[in-house]
Length: 136
Image 1 (cartoon, one colour):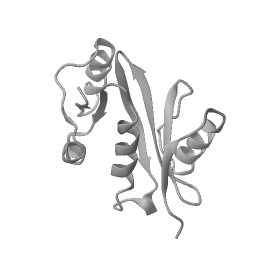
Image 2 (cartoon, one colour; image 1 turned 60 degrees about the vertical axis):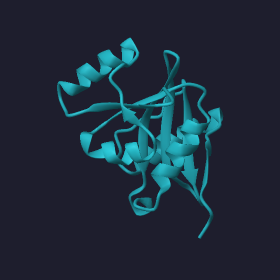
Image 3 (spheres, rainbow, N blue to C red; image 1 turned 60 degrees about the horizontal axis):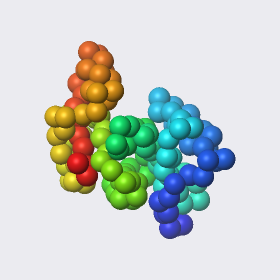
Image 4 (tube, rainbow, N blue to C red; image 1 turned 180 degrees about the vertical axis):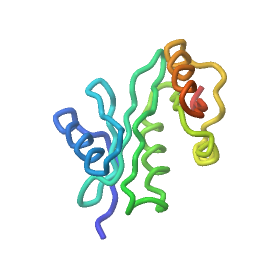
């Protein structure tokens, strides 16, 4: 088995993350204006996006390939990406994932940058979502 590496994806390679998401029928999308992080062995097995927001970052698009789940890949990828951030990191998630993110040091976040607060309110109209933050 190839060792897993966790690192930012260089700008010219950003389409690889979208290809990964599509190959797993994920609705996640990598965007050019974000820091893209991946976990890979022989190929990409997980990815996430860190988008600049206010004085920090908004973590989106965390997805792990089904065969690589329950092996600590998501936790390792999030930890590496967040550690590299200069500023706070926020994310939105289903309340069922709160324990996972709290285990990584995130806490319930009552105060969000205005743009993220507005987005969360919109998302909450259609599904249960909570906001968490770290490095605040």
